Length: 498
Image (cartoon, rainbow, N blue to C red; front, side):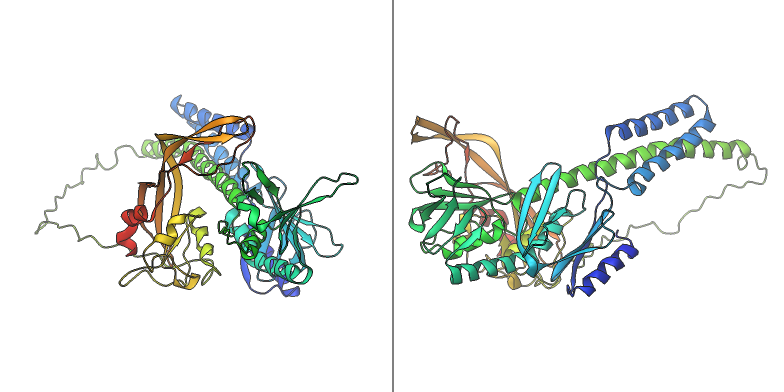
């Protein structure tokens, strides 16, 4: 929870800079305790239990509450690493407030040149490079609660502006630059290391592009026709906008995967951090319970000792047996009330905006989405990039955000079952890749309430070897997995969508 004082300071700064409506206020939290604190808290709980078992009740009574107060003080009173920080995301910019800056720092979206993601296991950054000579604003989201939602909210506001700016640059100047990669009407241009007397750029025409994809952590991979090694692979500023502009500009219709506003690598790091935080809270709850049990038991034992057998020894005590006149019948079961929509806004701006439900725990619905009711088909947003979508029955795949009734979150995996070996000719000779059965878990949510409608697990029945695979010199080929088909989807969730 963000304190009202800090929330007011953020709101005041946002109003002073005309940042518009609020998209959410987020606060940094302590996520992982040092090992020393774990050992001290666990040792104190053990001492408390031992003191109670040994009959030293006073020590147990004192040690229990002290242990609990120490744990709660560490969790709620000590600031997280890097100090306390708050950030408010608004329609036209953001406001960051931290102990390092005496005053809140505001950034307007139209003054941002680019957004750079950097994600490591313990270091997650979103850097805003302002227009002009202003210094770069670095927002460290390590330690913030709901990280994926925070980044998704930022990207939902800023990426459309950056994409529009890139479109204008491509139209007016014939080139839209994204760091080491640029989009031109003729194709993609990559920057090469500077060599005296040599060209520092390399053009790949559209007709020579075999595929491109946004692979997470702000990185893009481009593959040239007839080559196994990627022509370009690395981080670029505004990778989401770059990927979408490539899709729009390629005249040959080589369509890359549509990504949601949450960077895949950042979402994975955020999910791992949330798992650590959940384990942390569970451990704190267990230690707190261990600290309170001896004190509670000692207090109860002392109360009994002060009033020995008061009821049983009372001469006027009377036993009363109540016999019901009619047998008791349990009430009939009632259906649990459906959750009330509590989403971040009326509707996302695109179908991919619903995919935040797949990485949120718990997910939240969108109040403006149509209800899942009436006869089918019920338009569905399918997460990920899958070829089966084009083969689904009419009305299944939602055409736009305003029609989505269901959200299908698809998680891929494998049970390790072998299908066949796939062989490929390379410069190093023949290489083999194993083709295994891919398994897919589908979670189907109602878009307006985030109610879990159904879950299903299916095998992908498309079990042919890929025609082209990426190969690194001196390295074995990666395993392949069978893919989902429209028939698999119909078999798994057809009765809910149709």
